[in-house]
Image (cartoon, rainbow, N blue to C red; front, side):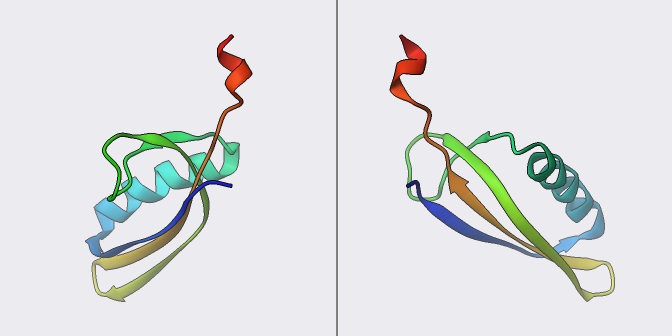
Amino acid sequence: IGWGYNLRFENITEAQSDTIETFLDARIADGDYFNWQAPDEASTSKYRALDRTKKIDYPGLATIQVTFTEVFEPWWQYL
């Protein structure tokens, strides 16, 4: 089982939240993984986005919460 990260993008603009939502919604819908560098890692790994939430805290500012879960590929895939 891989690592999981609960991320929070807090008080971002609506434009920024739209960009993040577009990416996350596409990855959640297709279940595809993406490369992401966790804050405590020296390199990127493969992750999937799980469910996300968005709320408008202040006019024009939003907060998005999402969970990223690390994905491992079988070693024999590279033979």
